[in-house]
Image 1 (tube, rainbow, N blue to C red):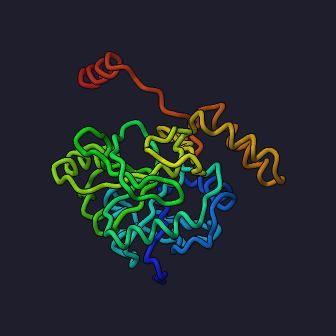
Image 2 (cartoon, rainbow, N blue to C red):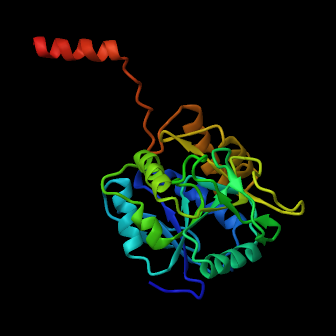
Length: 282
């Protein structure tokens, strides 16, 4: 795989069942990202083919979440990974100068993890380091939660790889990975660059900062309440955008899963016990 001078791979870690979201990611990433930012761009699926503007499609093969990500990292040569997922849709433009400086900072300081999304689960400590008005804060590991998270983050690839234990699904990886990181207690940096789901900044930044933003549009394999703003924007575009907007609206209105199926109804515990008993009786 090709290298670049900053040794950064922008990796979109997607699953095949969420193929319906690829188009939306593509549209809003292309609109708000600057491909002059020096990364190698990978859109990673399991076995499906994907065509996403500006990205090379790579594949992990089938398997549990952590195993699939580990397989991808084993095949990427770049030293750092800027991690995205396919349901994270950009809503404000990025500043290429910020990322160029960020990549240099990470390399110069041998950073292991720089979280780039704001959230109240993190408690941070101010430093004297700034990039484009953003304080490069450090996270207080003892009082913060989700030290292991799958939001937009710049990772040292080998450090991320070490956090992936076999057979871990994403929720277990975040939960157990956070416990492991609390015990390890590494230096984790934080920057308020992305307003994740509209979150306010949490660090002591300069007043002139200009943030980007993204919204996660998926919850439990269905579209969530963040998607209507993107539907509205698509409806003001060209015909194919309006057609995709109509598909999104249908999924949203009918609570369809991303593969077009009705969301399974939960059977309460009593009904499950009754069904089991009747089957045993038969």
